[in-house]
Image 1 (cartoon, rainbow, N blue to C red):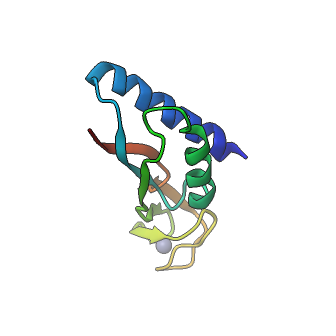
Image 2 (image 1 turned 135 degrees about the vertical axis):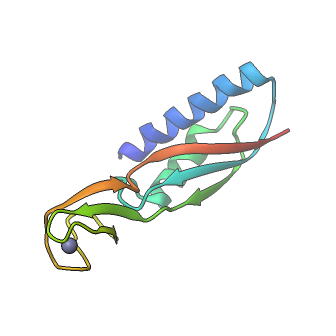
Length: 113
Ligand SMILES: [Zn+2]
């Protein structure tokens, strides 16, 4: 389950920030998980809860924003929104679409004390 290692990476990032910014507790972690990222939100949250045990992030609430996938269509040259990788262009049905956004996974910010 690669969500667990992603979650561990997030917790490590939070611990680094905790050292640099001297906070001791994280209330909420705001994550951006693009609709086209290869991440299952439930699995990521589960992994986070377990990776956060014994760290400043233990017990933190996970808040996820799910930006839609965006793509540029080769067929009709429009910028479109797609739900999943491999989906055709909703405008013209072409499968030649280039993903331009919505595949990111990152920490947007932390609510700390
Ligand atoms: Zn198209």
